[in-house]
Image (tube, rainbow, N blue to C red; front, side, top):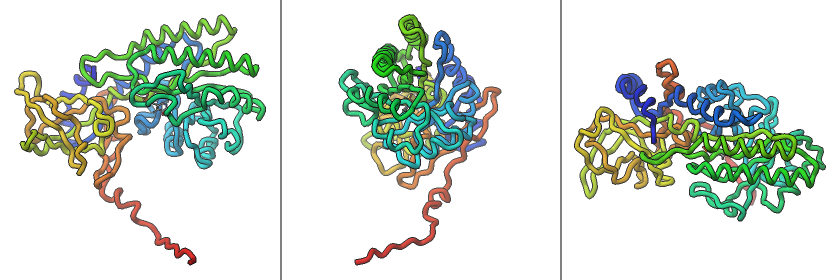
Length: 421
Ligand SMILES: *Cc1c(COP(=O)(O)O)cnc(C)c1O
């Protein structure tokens, strides 16, 4: 199910006070729920000697959230300079950080190596020659190509820009070894929002078989396999969630089997974003207009610049109207923002309780890839972020953008080039 009953029970009774105090719109995240899911993940893999989640920073890049991840014992998965700095700011150091970039620039490599470094996850064989100084631990991102089918959001592996191809992967480790690399890991990321846990089990089978083969050919061992993120959450009511315990049980059995055959087991790394924070955030917005033309439109004070998933992927996000439930008369509406873009809609032809101006709408499952995907098109400004703390307080964890922020990049010194004829 979307947003949990426990989160509703914590939030809804105080939501009007929160909107009175902070105004709208805002994303609000539920610390207790985030911690609970984080601990469930650790528990599901407790049978593996070394398991670690590296939270995918891009999903919710807020320092307060990253501090919670650190406190749970998670590392950080980054792919940009800003994400590296956020992770270090939250206390991540050295191998607490995986740097999984693609199309990596020299500046990226320099930042990844700064401040105690990070685990470099290389996206291509040719990058070995471009890393300014090769660390002793190297990971490659593997793209199995036609050996696997991908899923809807991420596309099929043969069409994906990521990773080292199947016919290059052994060569990649051979070259790394000959360049003096001593420690090895392997990574792949093939799914996004995948609800079938068996897909992740198959990914583990694939990587364990692959490291056995590479180890045999090159006489190296692997410190870890990283099966990526991509664990799904059910956005629609009535859809079953991913069976985490079954996934933990099956993958643990694979590791024990590997251990028996090879006399050691690698660590298991994962880098989920959505699964950890997705259901534990909501976008709170107020109805400000309604119009009846060919359809009925409910206009709210947020736009797709706060939450792009419906407009970009046609994604479903469940909506509650505060204080209105099954007993309120229903109507079918489109819930829309203010952008001059007809896909600026949070819901299309959705049956909702009849909404009046001033009603508070709660748009579920914005705790990952929500605020983070925000943008400024049409001069729209990104909203604030709040945290409902585990002890029941509400804290501002990012202020709203202001018009001055929008104009900030327009303040600069003149720089005029007159090219020679
Ligand atoms: C986006 C991304 C993730 C996180 O994906 P989720 O669907 O949020 O779990 C993890 N790893 C990499 C390399 C990614 O690009």
